Amino acid sequence: MAANSDARLRYLSAVFLIAASILTAKLFFLQVIKAEDYKTQANRQYERPAGPTFDRGSIYFTNRDGQEVSAATLQTGYSLVINPTKLQDPEAVYGALNTVYPLDYVNFIARAGKNNDPHEEVGSRLTANQAKTVSALNLTGVGLIEQKWRFYPGGTLAAHLLGFVGYQGNDYSGRYGLEKYYDNNLRREEPLSFSNFLGRIFLGLAEPASSTNQPGDIVTTVEPTVQRFLEHELESVQTNWQPTLTGGIIIDPKTGAIISLAAQPTFDPGGKQSDVERLTNPLVERVYEMGSIIKPLTIGAGLDAKVITPTTTYDDQGVIAFGDREIGNYDRRGRGVVSMQEVLNQSLNTGVVYVMQQLGGARLAKYFQDFGLLGEKTGVDLPGESGGLADNLKSRRAVEYATASFGQGFANTPLAITAALSTLANGGALVRPFVVQKIVYETKLTKETEPTIRRQVISPEAASTTTAMLVQVVDKALLGGKERLAHYRVAAKTGTAQIRQPGGGYYSDRYLHSFFGYFPASNPRFTIFLYAVAPQGAEYASATLAKPFFNLVKFLLNYYQIPPDR
Image (cartoon, rainbow, N blue to C red; front, side, top):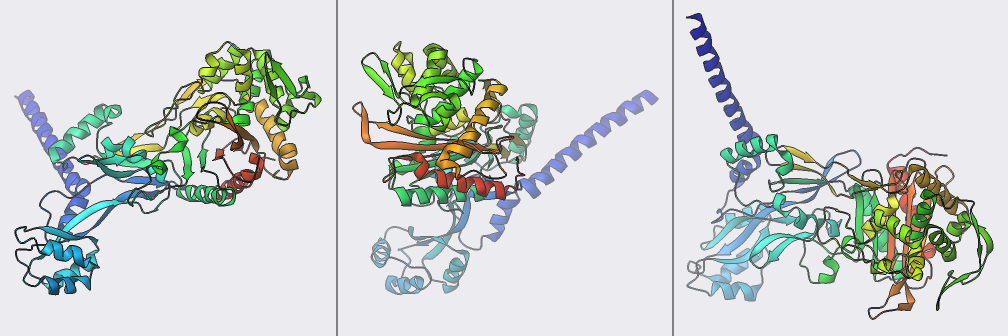
């Protein structure tokens, strides 16, 4: 008898527990999940739309203190509509409305003249105050419909990262950038019901990694103040040197988190898009031959393979012949017997060709492949990423490997180059760059991005030695050591590459300037990569990009209060 009583008690307890759990979930659903929807309904004082209003998840930046800052959200307002079948005096109605909200007279009268049409929109995006004033006019045949639209509080800030929302045919969805890549998470196909809420909770708890299509908000790694400062520096390069395009990336070399990414010229994601060329993100969708910033990777490979040391010397004659072709230093002048340190200090093409010869072409190509430079994509969470172009390194001709050693003859995206160069800053590991650090689903469950090491490319010792050599480049060689920081070790290198002509060969008067570096060199927090395509009035990147690079370095050191490392 007692056993039966205990069983019934356990059964009743289980029933009450399940009921209480469902009631608690229901309250959470109503008070937290659907709170904004009910608030919206409560605030509707005017005519409601015939169908559901536009809805979409938000995108956030993350500031240095970990606080979320709105990057893309929804703005609420009202559209102004008229019913021509009920308008008694269109001229008078126009006059009254025009004092509240500016209207195009010709358009208004034309729409008001459609006597068989009960619904014509004559204005959009009215504010709540404007809508209240219109409502108070109590005009027959005039109505207000609540509307929502995509809003980017920062204006043009991070436009190439964010993308925008627009039509493709009849589909209104994310176009370019994060809006496109995470469209399945950001779009809202239908209102979330309580039953769906419970289902998504159980799905999420059971298998969070499978939730790629669950609706939610996107939280990025982008720091808005840093983003704005980078864009300011790129604008100054555009103004001072008139390149066709300028771009920059700031990344955490240890995790791959993208702190900032920008290109100029840019666009307003909240405006009408008329220049399609500006919409493409050149940092992930276009490839370039990068030139001398590849030299540290060649040196790092040689150090890793132990075919050179920083003090290894060779006899620089200024030019090296490969059959009927010659490869020379930028000035074709020989320096005599010089060390590998001087190869980086003076950016000597013949020096890295010497390293290639000690490695062998096939082994150099294997290192470049491991650096992710031979056609592999980085896997960044942005749409349209291009792989590199490296057919030259499938050749058996030694000259192709020679030119590759100093960054000509193969092309990569700026992001791929930034990831490859970051291996020197993080102990030799190739990391996957990423922009979104977490997705917060409508159910309030969260999926966080785990940093990914794609592979170890060179040894920590080789990376550390290359770093020390690049610090010497800044301290002694770059602009005569004028940019040396007294209390911080900065590792950096410039690049100046010939730009390939569409029909073959290279332009004689157009160059791609690049500049990369990381700091503090003893424990790097940031890798910066900058580039400018065909700048005017300066032959070398040290003239065009050194100042903005070191402006960024000093800003980041101060903004993040990074302690000195010397």
